[in-house]
Length: 323
Image 1 (spheres, helix red, strand yellow):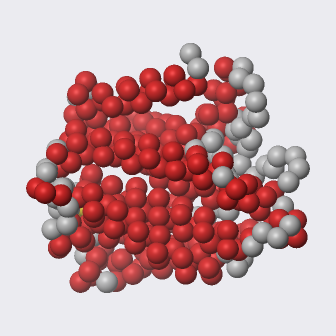
Image 2 (tube, one colour):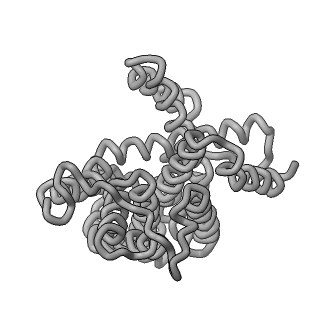
């Protein structure tokens, strides 16, 4: 079976999920899709641009809070609120990206953490808007345009999430295969040489930072009505660490690999936490083993097992030969 046929088969199976699986499993798959979208957005930074952000949760949390506020107070239709949440995260990321991309390496990573922690502190202190440490509860799935409430029901909302993930994948794939994506690869491999070739490296990094944050905000905007709340924990730096683990375990610079990483993370956490209180220790050991023995991630392991030809999936931080 060719790659395209296999992907179509997987897509067909995913579309059938809310009609063939019980409620609990449908909820789990929905969560996997949302976090897969979140991890895919980070892959644009980590895998394709070489920018290690430890504050990526800020975009997710801002999208969640923006959508929650609109759904709670403005009675805005669900699809519009989700788009507005994503746009809010992208717009806020522009000035933040301008500041963060003036630094490189560890300094860039620390700046992203600082801004994420600033957003976290604001979410706790601004109680009149954000609900403080309790967050915003009771976020509804308001009917869509013209009173259509299909998205408010479980199957409809699941299809909305799946549609956002598929649309994001197609957008990201087109982006990384475009001249813009070529510029990002040049910056990742040798930024100084890319500048000498005429690329405005900071402008490209600001743009991809904003795009990545917008897509993270889209995931957050879906998560708020999915769980029915938006809380400060969605902005915390540990949450950024979790999504970075999803990217590394799934396989950076693959787009679909981080979705696999999200599925592995969520399913492993659910299973291990149900059988032992030491689940976090076991997960930590598993991640260490992945970094040591499978640095290319799940997607790369599958690629090797299939014996597929072509360029291999490379570990995070490695560079392909040449510019």
